[in-house]
Amino acid sequence: MNRLLYLNFLVIILSWDMVYGVEEPKTIVLTAPWVSANSDEGIVGGFSAGLSRYPDMLLYSSFYSSSKGHIGIGLRGEQAVGNWRLSGGVSLTRILRLLYKPVRGVPEPYAQGIVNRFELNISTLARIEGNLEIGPNLIVDIVRGENPTDSLDQSIDLSTVPRFQHGSTSLIGWRARYSTTNPLRPIDGYVLEGSFGVGRSAGDYLNSPVPDFSSNLRVSYARKLTEGTRFYTRLAWSHQHSAPPATRSFTSMLRNLRGQPDQRDFGRRLMSLRTNLYFMLLQDWSLPFQVMHSIWSLIPLVDMNVEMTAFYDIAEIGDPEFGWGIPRRGYGTGFRFVIPPELVLYLDFATTPDGDVRFYIGTGELL
Image 1: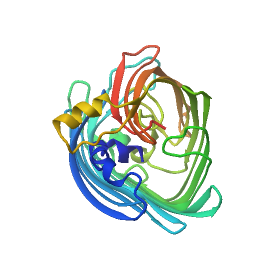
Image 2 (image 1 turned 135 degrees about the vertical axis):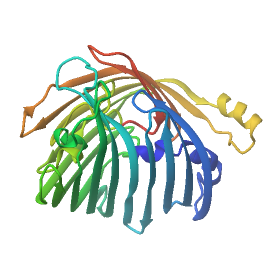
Image 3 (image 1 turned 45 degrees about the vertical axis):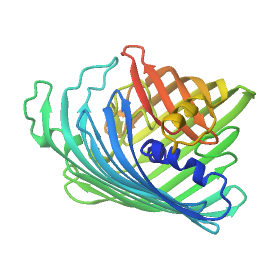
């Protein structure tokens, strides 16, 4: 869902005055370009289309390309019918993946290669009682790498770098969520979410398909300390049984670790802890949208909150092949520009004990 917001900030901005507060279903189709950036992908630009039938349907299709060769197309959204909610997405991406040695500090990559990836994740959740939702979950992940090279830009035999080989994982199972606050932007409450799936994995590394299963658990807690401050923390655990190297879990800014290179470590076990402390700087600030509205009247007049945040992330990758790796840490500060209740534009600066400062710009709360 974070990627959903990340790809469609301008779409939501343009539609805000037409859908917010509408009681009867109303169908709206909008398109818009967008620009974002971060240290791992570079400058990212794209084009998105949105279909909204408020409050029951929200669908987005997006295309993006970056200055560092990343390219992708995706469809994400959700549909509510009574007590049922269908959510998920499908994407095709082509990125430049870097490989790092498992040492302390922030080393230079020793290999790189193009990775093509297809991801599908669909859940159908039914509200059982009160705040509890549960339903079936489908995950398909297919990865194929090409043209790996070393640090001197010399070609490497694909068989020597399993992370770039072909690999796939297909699982079906159950997902459950119990939340006492908005899971997209927790303000005061907690979210318990877990999933379990069984299926099979295949690929060059495994030689032939093998049975597989995975489980995920996330515990999030948000607490308002004062009228202008709040605290958020999230503990996550991921377990994969037989996934090939190409589809194994990894450390990443959006998922679990700011300040470290994207996908620095990967394996079949992942533990991560994310903490944020928020301070309200400006509340109900309307000046930016007054200026933009004077330039382009389609941009609505809305109020915005500005928050400052201090954060600390820690994550550790493990695998039966090598045990647990080195805990990676990242910390820093940033800003949140919020259109209540949950539309967020973020700007973060993060570093590590031995690394340089990395920056991240995008939309959606980093949960």
